[in-house]
Length: 106
Image (cartoon, rainbow, N blue to C red):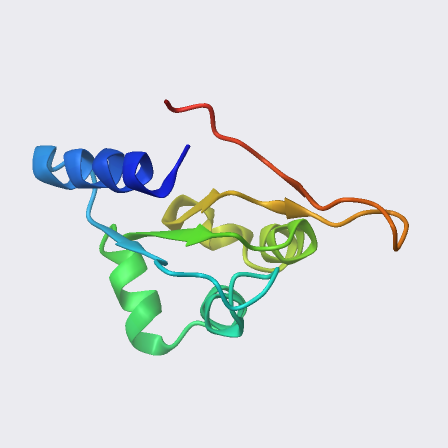
């Protein structure tokens, strides 16, 4: 899904009131989607936890699979507040390609 399609889907969901959501946008800061997303996921502030407890969902975009897996292990109680798009799977060899999960929502 290209970024314009992704934005339209999120905008439609917000307009319909399906879910209150925060979204990570503009993650051109490296393979792991930016350290701020990783920090928010693994070390949320009290305010972020409070918003999650009230039903807020945050969409994390472009994180590495290992980061997502770590969050699932260490913060499973918050799973209902997490959504992940374009998860990056690092290659098993230095010359391999990074594989990015496609959500097929076109």
